Amino acid sequence: MGSKERIQRIKEETRVNILDAALQIVMEDGWQALSMRKIADKIEYTAPIIYEYFANKEGILLELTRKGNLLLLQDLKKARETNDTPEKQLTAMWIAYWDFAFANTQLYQLMFGVDCMCCEMVKALPEAEAARKLIWETIAEVMKDTPPAEELVCRKYYTFWSIIHGLISINLVRRGTNDEMNQHILKDAINGIINSINE
Image (cartoon, rainbow, N blue to C red; front, top):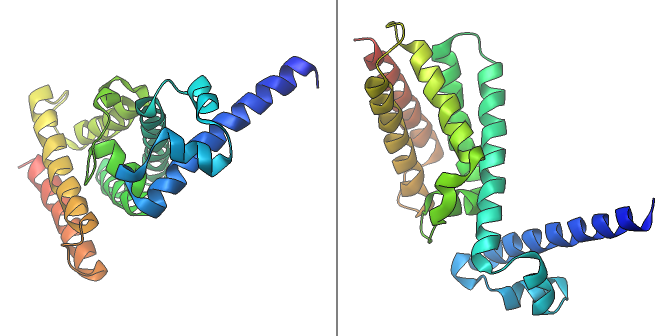
């Protein structure tokens, strides 16, 4: 490996270490505790080195948001690919969305502003748009109209998202019910919306 490649590899490793340290701080102390100084201390670097990789804390938050959206998109694609009808795909995708929120709580909180400030630039992330589009397209496939009215697809997407995100948010701030009850509520909501699509 040449010196240029080695330097590039070290830079990428340092960048990943910064992001991993930031996420670890958040997992231990919450989003409000995150600072450039704490990240530098965690990886035993000086703060100026952190600024060589990220201009500010918002840059780190944006990159973590990108990472979260990419992981969510992968989960949604896998859920869609393992089911054979649009209705089953849609159900599996929303359950995967739910599972992602609880497996990656800190990233979900950042991505959607649950109990913390979320990045305002999230709308510009292609990963976030790709996840939304995947669900949107599957909703359209469930509809009998060819092609369905965009306004109706939009309304159903936001109905799904509002209910499921709301249920996740309630549970993330510890005001929800037990896991078994949550699964019943989640499946009732998903099935109810799917059944209402072609009424």
